[in-house]
Length: 329
Image 1 (cartoon, rainbow, N blue to C red):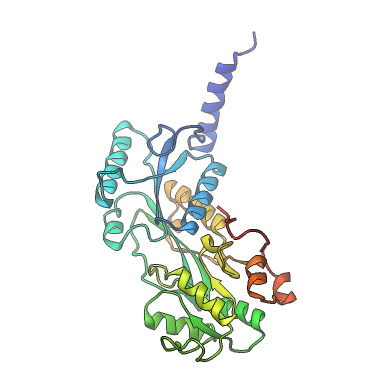
Image 2: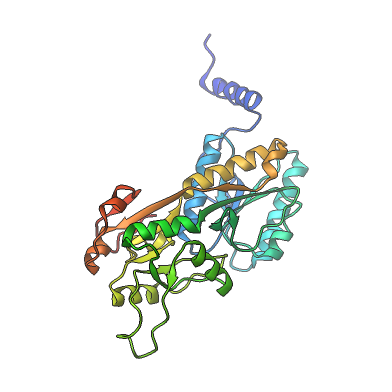
């Protein structure tokens, strides 16, 4: 007599576990706290790039046939320390049951250095994006730890300069800085990108000052993002494109958005966790992913009367023409 459908499912489950060495992906569930959620992720609040990277992690775990990952959100009565304490208890409970340890993915600048130090004995991967100069990432390094993987999506400062030269056609584009970062870091970045920063206009004298080719709304070395509205106002007043690295500002007035390939970085992050879990020592080294995307908002350009060079259009990864309220997820 043919085997029943439930019996076939059980045999398939066992076969996959024996061959793959990991449990198949769990499906369904209601998010964090669901029995289906084995692994966890803490995301930098309000950052569109962090959420896109998280989606890449989720997809990477699906393809690897690992258990599901869900975002860990603090409860109303707990802070970060309490959340991490709850996660530690969850890992300890899994070990006590004889289950594999769940992994925690720290996406973006979700946790300060002291909280990362508290995770050193737990399996986790830190995934961040940022800039580099000649391969050296800007910002504070992530200390190594026996059970920690680190993945960085990085963009070279020189690449940013190349994108701006392609737009304005000037050997050394003149930019108005409206981004964030330590003063010394900003100076190093602009020098490496071969960009000349124009002086600030005196308050109340908007008609004076040096003309600029672009307004930069970039985030360096993990600093909090600078106000977008001020950058957009400066770009419109100066008749120049606003260049941002905030994924959430595509469709919100930024003419040129330079973003990492968050999906790829997320999938690499998932792969690092999988390799660390099976004991591959090579996975402990910090991984750099240099994959950037150029997005142009034609609607924003039209509203400002900006002409986009054909050469730049030809090398653009995404073009948008629509209402300003339309934002990608």
